[in-house]
Length: 333
Image 1: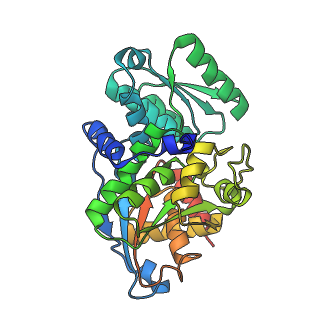
Image 2: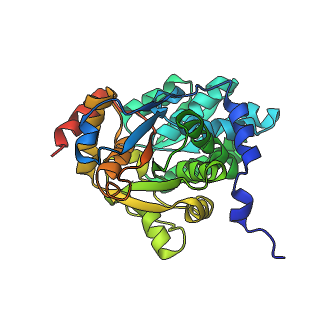
C-alpha cells in the first residue's frame, strides 16, 4: 500500500470539521442562511429554481476568513499564541488575523501591500494589529518571514493548510444544517482555501450536492491550474475583486479543489458590478465584488446547468468602503 500523499493528509475528516466548529464557536457567530428574498434575481432564472444565501458577510471581521485564522490559532499551544501571529494579505485575511489576536489576547503584525484598500488597513488596525505596508508581494513575503524568524510569531497562511480548510469547512456544515438538502452550492474562489474546505465538508455530509467555484476572468488562476493539472506558482491578476486575486496557487488547496469541486466558471468585472447592485436592491446588503461573483455565476454561466434546482450561494464578505462601493456600482453596464 502506498503512503498517503500530502494532499491526502491535508483533507479534513468529519471529526476535524466538527472539532473546528466547536473550537471556534465561542469566538464567532453562526451567520444566517435565508431564502433569497427579492424578485429581481429570478427574472432571468427558471421559475422553479430555488435560491438560499449564506450571509457570511455578517460574520465578525466582515468575512469568512476568521473561521480559518481562529482554527489555526486555537490549534497552537499557549506559548505559541503568546508570541502572536503574522500574515500577508491585501485585506480580509489581515483583518481576520488581527481579530484572532484581539480575541485571544495576543498580538498581530500583519504585512499588507501599499495598494491595499485604506478601509481594510484601518479595520486591521482597529483590532490592535501593527500593519506594515510593503511595495510588492515579494517584499511582503520576505518581511513576514523576517517577523516569523526574529520574533517567533506564527505565520497564518491565508488559504493553505489543514486547519485552515477545516475552519473554512465549518461554513459548509452550517449551510447544509440551516438550508437542508441542496442540489448545488456556488463558492467564490480566490486562493482556494474557502472552496477547498467547503467542498470537502459538503461532500462528507451530502455527496450528491454539486460544488461549483467562480473566479473573475481577470483572476482565473484556479481554473488555469486545473487545466494545467497543477497549482500555478504565479498568476496574472487584473480584477476589481481584490479578495479573489491571489498571486499564486498552492498544492494542497489545489489538490482539494481538484478532488472535491465539480466545476469552475468565470465572470467579468462588469458582471460583478451589476450583481453588487442587484444584491443591494434584492438583499439590502452592500457586498464586495467577491460574493457578487457567485450571483453572477448563477445568472450567467451556471444558469442553464442549475435550472430548476435548489442552489446555495455563499456571500463571503463585505469589507468595502462607501466610496469604493459607490464607484463600482457606477461601473455597472
